[in-house]
Amino acid sequence: MRPHSAKLPATSGPARPVGLRVRRAARHWASALAGALLLAAAAAPAASAGPAPDHGADPLAWTGTWATTPTATPASDTTAFRNETIRQTVHTSIGGDRIRIRLSNEFGSVPLVIGEARVARPAAGGPSSRIDPRTDRPLTFGGRTSVTVPAGAPLLSDPVSLKVPAGADLVVSIHLPEPTPGSTLHAFALQHNYVAAGNVTGRPDIEPTATIDRWYFLTGVSVSTDRSSSAVVTFGDSITDGSDTDVGANHRWPDLLAGRLRASAGPNAVGVLNEGISGNRLLHDPNPPAGSDAENFAAYFGQSALRRFDRDVASQPGAEHLIVLLGVNDLGHPGTVAPESERVTAADLVEAHRQIIARAHDRGLKAYGGTILPFKDDTLGFYTPENEAARQALNHWIRTGGEYDAVIDFDKALRDPSDPQRLLARYDSGDHLHPNDTGAEAMARAVPLRLLR
Image (cartoon, rainbow, N blue to C red; front, side, top):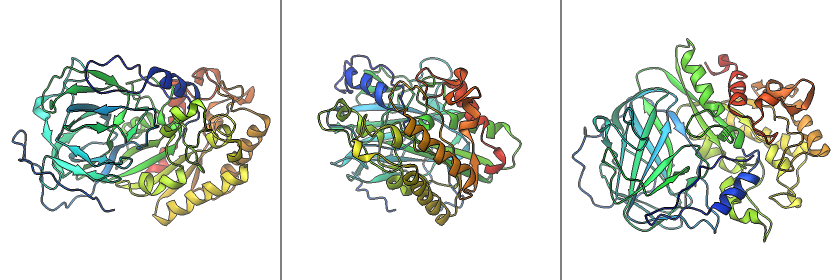
């Protein structure tokens, strides 16, 4: 799949986003893209602004309201931050009275020093970089406002009292006081985020030195409320990640599914957690052919679904349901952005899905299989008669094998009845592989809400 990538303007500050050539290549090739918390706290005074965080016992359960998957960066991506603040926006699926933020240095090779971090709701009107100061809260970690995250580790904040509405934006500002490589990120956020000089985490207005369409070091938001709640994890590639839907519109199909759930009359709140990665595969990590342009972007495709399952699915707060839509990149990448030696069969894909089902059931999750969308005449070179035959065989097993707890027939919902190997034109983003906003809406409608109640 071809992930959307917002155009990065030239920066006046020292952050160095990846170059335009790489972004263009990634947009062209990134196809059908789908513990213990170790920390060493750096001494810092507790922040005085906003209500004090809650350090006491936590009697209420936590449920994820937003999530994304972290990946590594290719060697060509030299993005770094030096005494800068990253202000990033996420969109909640359910609301709550308290929140926790998950940060990550999981792909960093050096400790991540966070000078200060804060969370707020955006201001009504004005630029999207502006926050409402009445909602501004400091984030603390073991009671401290400054913290060092070891290389390879995630970090969970203390609970924060903040009323968070469902279906609303939330702004997280992180100050990085030391030279910091942008080593852990989600590369295709479909959301404008901002970099500014110095520590401006608590300022309502900032002067951005760069606009980025990535999430750096931020991987999850969970909420606590007295209302019964659970979460569904959407586990996929670029179609789930939202590639080719409008930037800033929250028109990814999981976002639209969350909207349907909020509008329905169910007694429980259901969070929707998007764990899609553009270019992701079931069976293989990124492995660009030596000397190919894919060396400049394949790392953004993330670890294989089988490798990342425990972090991205099994450990999600409140998760009870799983929707799987993966396999098309396993078919299309070999010979394009992966070696031909990694070509897989339908039987290989079936066995990978069986592993996901078994691991989901082992954790008490209900697992639902999504059929793979058609991609005849796609512009990325995925379609061949052999790949189509493998897609059909995999879809037949998903529909009839009886191993998933239920089937979500995305293929049937979006294919052209007159040529079932193609996407219906009104759902096609133009590359014959990724759905547009209308197609994402059709995908959300294809999910029976009764499965998630």
